[in-house]
Length: 432
Image (tube, rainbow, N blue to C red):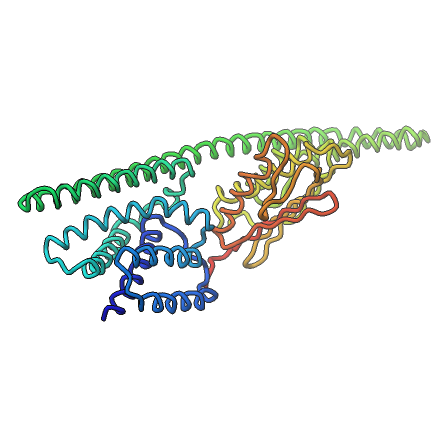
């Protein structure tokens, strides 16, 4: 019976942290769990082995905590670093709830240290999932993707609260006379819940506001790019109309030169006309999508005179990829390529932009010449040695995170003085 109780406590500690990460922190599960089944089975076997030892409740709790880290690492699309960062907040938060619930259970019926632990864990798990079904699933999932500095502040606050509540719980339930226990439990419960809820609301609305400001900034930038794009289109259309208006006069002039046998003058005149036509055609880039066309024209036009640019491919105007996400991916790819070219002293710079659309996938590739001496690779990521370390830092991170939303991937290659970056996205709803 004791072994069964130990196993139940270990299992529900793991389920408690899994539930917290899914319902409160809104972490995303991996697309397929087929590869993880063997690891999950191994986890349960190890839990059974540990449950055979006569550990104290606190020891069992920490063992379950360690195994929950392992489970969350294989079930959620988060790096080990991000998981540990979230645990710094999760641990004190759940510890506060556990303290409150355990003291409530003790006031009703004290079943011993381990006996109180199991119903406490079950109650917390039920509360987490009720919250998620009633409120949590309708909230913005990105509202808790906040910076490390903010997480550190939140974690510090929660740890301090955890220590304070533990201390006052001891005072109210052990030092004060038994008549004050009920009042103490009510104060601890209401105070803890109030502080946690307020903290949760502040994080949510603070980050929602930050995301809103980020979107406003993005829209302003995008609108400015579109404005420039359409101004370029109008200029191109104006130049085209002017050329068409004068084409008859040009042809008459060429005919006159031909009749007079002025071959060299005629050849030079035709060359000037062709150069003018070429200049008109080069004032814009198009792959069939307004967002991408706007970005390409905005970033590539300034370097067109010093760099050989090639744009190929076609994609639909409407896809199941949001305009914002498409802009994040393409703008960062192209901006990084342009910055690499501007920092390259080579006189034969080259940039190739390719887009390939299939029935289920969209592939976007950018190839650009670069100065290989200015970059190094650490942990699979590019690190620039120049002062502007954002060159291949934040932009690439944004690309990777956005690609994950569409079950896609980002990968790159450095070879023979060229940097090749490729993003593949699912353009149809992903079905596991």
